[in-house]
Image (cartoon, rainbow, N blue to C red; front, side):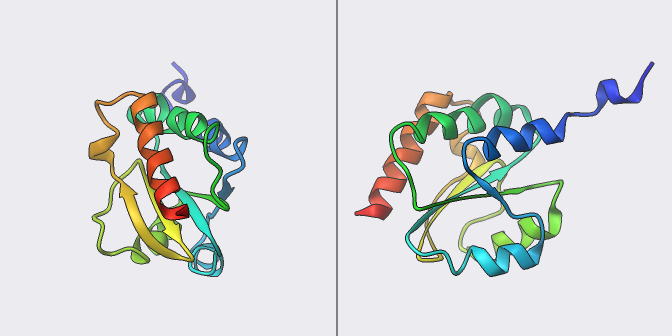
Amino acid sequence: MHLHMFMPDVQAMREELTRLGFAELRTPEEVEARLPNAKGVTLLAINSICGCAGGIARPAAALALQEVRPDNLMTVFAGQDKEATAAARALFPQYPPSSPSFAILKDGQAVDMIPRSQIEGSDPQTVARRIVEAVRHAQA
């Protein structure tokens, strides 16, 4: 039996978002340099290897981007790039840690959050609508 049969393909999970234009922030330094200084509206995807990330969150991001385009798309990967994820979460302590999730920031400040509780048990279309509404609200 091969061990890799049980190991998730993390690179493929990353590429689901980077193919959409999300910039990966893999270190705390990258987070600190880019996220708080981003001008305009940023959609930050907090990626995860769980089933609701692959079956709901990442597909929802793809659907949402067909309707709305934030100024910045960024992602951190919880459980993989732990320090980068912690640095991102430190920028919005008013929201409890959650993955997968989406943070919506305006000029580097968190203005909305779509936590796992609003993703898990939902469907990609519903989550996409939540993303679109949150981004449009931030753009208004």
